[in-house]
Amino acid sequence: MRALCCDGADSARLERGYPEPSPAAGEAVIRPSLAGICNTDLELANGYMGFSGVLGHEFVGIVESCGDSGLVGARVVGEINCPCGSCSLCLSGKGNHCPQRTVLGIMGRDGVFADIFTLPVGNLLVVPDKITDTQAVFTEPLAAAFEIINQVRIGPGDKVATLGDGKLGLLVGQVISLTGCDLVAVGRHPEKLEILAQRGITTALDRDMVSMRSSFDVVVDATGSAKGFALAVELARPCGTIVLKTTTANPAGLDSNRIVIDELTVIGSRCGPFDKALDALENRLVDVEPMVSEIFHFDYGVEAMKRASEGATLKVLMDFN
Ligand SMILES: [Zn+2]
Ligand SMILES: [Zn+2]
Image (tube, rainbow, N blue to C red):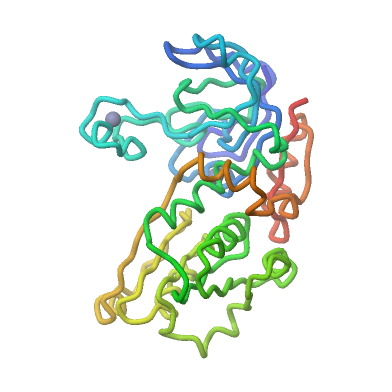
């Protein structure tokens, strides 16, 4: 089968004779219809985490076969963490942190940039008919944005800044705005921030934030760069909260003194609730289509990865049909 792979050292390449996966007990075989390229995929292809295998974790697809015959033919999205189910973290409901877990297209498990792939049936959610494939492919990163409001109580009256106007930053801005808080979405690209401004969200360029130092209750860093964390520390008020939403292949040293002196709370934030993301898409609470920069046919997957790595690009999708 076709598969877009990396070996942890070199950039992504399209293989045509990659062996088809055989599903383990309890797993479904899924044929992706549409897949999204995430910054994590670009970082993995550059050697982050030493991953080798098939890339990709953002998908919507059709169940081709599985033990539960009711699911065959269903249009699904899927949670990307595959926990062991029996360790103490799994038993306490924190399977996303299971030390034995595999993660779709990220850690120990081939991903979705292939003609078929496998996932445990328990990871799958059927996509409501009202949601298009183009919208559904945003479920995973949108769920990650919802994780923030799972972790931090944000509501009317709270002053919040989101940093970053990339793919994840624009989803984070939209999700935080649903809380009714006093939000400023900060970025570097007026044309990208315009997607948020269209939804009535206040936006600002990061160079104009100097006067706003030490004034935000919560600052969310979704910049994907070490500089974002430094800006977040500057913008948070004493005893405020910083949420770190993006990993970076090149973490820089950070000045921890301000965290101590201002008694800041720093929270790491990764994967989130798929059901809330699907609900938001179904009820049009967020707008994801303006974020699609280009759709490539999967045969041009290498070119799609290259396009996704260009600065002006937002979401690049791959079509498998
Ligand atoms: Zn991702
Ligand atoms: Zn476990």
